[in-house]
Image 1 (tube, rainbow, N blue to C red):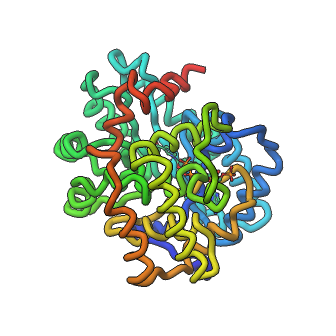
Image 2 (cartoon, rainbow, N blue to C red):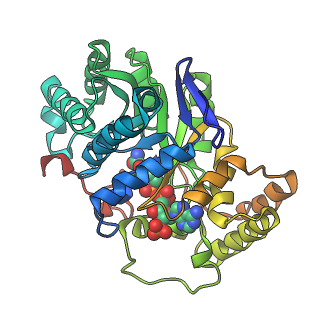
Length: 352
Ligand SMILES: NC(=O)c1ccc[n+]([C@@H]2O[C@H](COP(=O)([O-])OP(=O)(O)OC[C@H]3O[C@@H](n4cnc5c(N)ncnc54)[C@H](OP(=O)(O)O)[C@@H]3O)[C@@H](O)[C@H]2O)c1
């Protein structure tokens, strides 16, 4: 049965995801206190509204377990068939500290832990992340992950934040990456520097995060002066750097104003237009929008119904034509652990 309220994308003949995925990072700490019972109820509200796909990670502290509780509660209230339409996309992010000595047993332990926390017999889709290309064991690790798929622990193996050369290597090693999760937004067009075309040529769909830039792409920031450090949460700290690379606060304000004019014409909000803009790009299967609670749910649902016109796109593109960056392949800036983007990351969260 298809949900009437939200478009879906078929990743496989019997595997449909909602084109808006509920992001889970905001429940991991670093974005304010979380009431666990309310978080589980919120997930039910998203699922009932048609946002039936959830993104999380082994390293998002406590989030897999919350989704596991939600799955059980949803099965109890809505039945097993309804639960089967809910899909959970997690990640496998081995700690930086173990990369040079990683063994298959480390990968197996991560997957077994996710299975247990999520209360699943088989993980739906696992997105593999590797912190350091200088430790070139990601091929071995990806092959182990694929072995775990063949052993029945995982349905789809995917990647996140890998650039074209590494995706090419993993495909050549026989790892059937189903999707790639990448940062892609009106502020960050790095996937268009080759990855979109490469992924399309290999039948890989993109799942995109950062489409609302942690909330920066919203009315709250329109017409306000540039904020100073410290910002109120980790997302805003991270996306402020992207705004700086994009061209700075003044150009960002021009973009917000253009998005606001488009939003007013459709009676939606800035964030909805910003996410729809990404959803309409070639190769994009879904946008992943983070949520601390259900406050933005109606706006997130509106992404599915919004249809941008050529005039809307032209108005946005007129500002984007003047953007300065960020440049390069996906996640290249973030991989410099001493640089502005890389130095704010946490690299060993599985060991906690
Ligand atoms: N693979 C990776 O490396 C990676 C990296 C980052 C994220 N992700 C995944 O992608 C998800 C989303 O990306 P993100 O964490 O960067 O966050 P995001 O989706 O760019 O921003 C989410 C925040 O934006 C605000 N927001 C959402 N809808 C809004 C609306 N309609 N109007 C105004 N504000 C709105 C909310 O903040 P307030 O509640 O404060 O208003 C929300 O918490 C994450 O949860 C995670 O699952 C993956």
